[in-house]
Amino acid sequence: MKIDKDYAIELYGISKKYTIHHEKPTLVEKFFKGRDEKFLALNNINLKINRGESVGIIGDNGSGKTTLLKIIAGITAPSSGIIKAGGRVVSIIDLNAGFHDDLSGFQNIYLNGMFLGMTKKEIDRKLRDIIIFAGIRQFIDAPLFTYSQGMKLRLGFSVAIHSNPDILLLDENFSVGDEKFKKKCRDIIKKFRKQKMTLLIASHWKQFIDQNCERIITLKNGKIIKDIHPGLKTKS
Image (cartoon, rainbow, N blue to C red; front, top):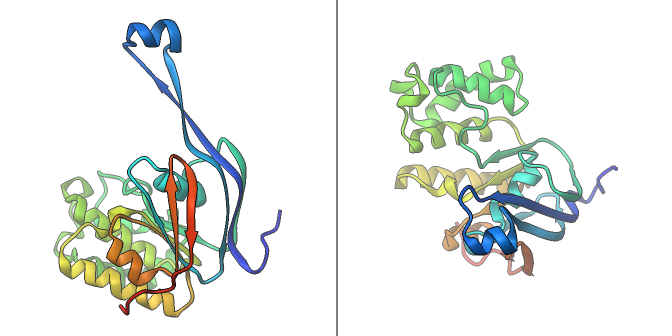
């Protein structure tokens, strides 16, 4: 199925069900529920995202925000429904995806870049900018297992934004880091908005969502309960 030219993402009847296996079930679970419990993380999501739209996804922990982004990114398959996306989709969701702990930061740039669909020549051309943006020049030859979570985040974010995505998905982990890195995030998101890149941002960082998203979707128990278009409330 082709995607409508006006949309970057189309979701039809998307549901995601997980099976929770209880190793040591209680008596109630054993005799009345069984050893396995079904959890519906997403429940019949229908959603269309316009090309060039910046969309914030909010909701309590467990509401389905990250699951929704993972399905759009292709990291997780839906249990049912149809998903269509136009262009290169790049995500900052799972810091371990496309990385290998035993390889150096330098080697992981190539590994992660190719994982995101970049060619070796493209990575060669952007290598210096990726390293500088990540701010890990003195650690670039060290193995990834020596990196802090913040360093891994900066490296993953840097590779992602230099991969020329059409659609960028950001999970709430991207807001972790010092103020200098957060400012870099704000500046690059502002640049992408001006370039009319399609952005989906799942975060509890409400000020960032308000400043950078023209549309805000609220999830609760795997369902969309609000979909509003307040516009950008403040300048960034």
